[in-house]
Length: 215
Image (cartoon, rainbow, N blue to C red; front, side, top):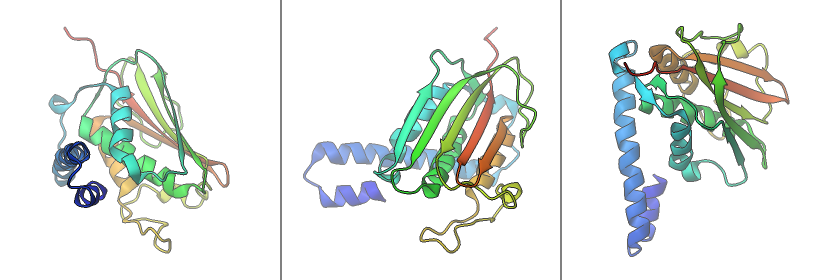
């Protein structure tokens, strides 16, 4: 919508129009894959999983979000070099990050911060909400915010469909964002972990199995 409005406001700026049209086309292609996946939850088989560059997925997600993240929010990223490819579906991984980043942004006060990290992890933690499929090693992708945190009595319910704490806020939620994160992770065999304390922020971690080397 933001891209369409900018095109409407600046039809004479060919470079700006081209940039925004490219972004619209990219988002439409991504949405197509997401809708197909939502219509077929549980139908993503091992044959559809492909090696994905986790760092590239993170960087492209930040570019696609663009102005959807408030300008007074700082986004810091620390991506370990030479991360191995992970098994996944690129569109689903990107949508998981979009949902986590927008959730993090909603939790922040002005001048809050989101920290994105990615690193290699050999052994999954014991306290994962969703354990990953067995693999020799993994890539962990972490989204951490400095927001108000999630109360302990709500934390067990955040991945339930249609559960939302935004019903009375200025930005109403559908209650499907974190549900989609959970379901997409489950489809791809990725692990999922969350840690949060009131006034200490929230950390979501995705654990993606590293793709085996080609034969």
